[in-house]
Image (cartoon, rainbow, N blue to C red; front, side, top):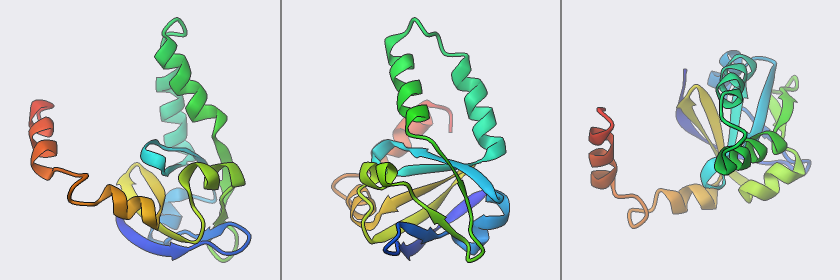
Length: 143
């Protein structure tokens, strides 16, 4: 399980150090793709396979399903950690997530998210997030 929040910096080649606490669970090879909310999603291969199977069940006749599948798979890239625990973030994914220099890497249960620091700060702005509203919606879902 991935948990926690870590501040990192991209180097000039677009690489970021993956937090050491994430490396073993992530494995040597993984899949990185465009995430929601202008971040990147990083999945261990086994979790990517689970997600892929779920997405295969979506009806191709549904326009939104097709759009989501395209968004998710077209933006995907296989990645690997180098000997220093860094991962290269492809240019198209850096552009999608507005990653330039400062980044935040967070653990979200079965996946890792990579955010630009500016996007993460904006997302966590008290005016943007209403924790009471979120809690009410979670209660509606039975959580």
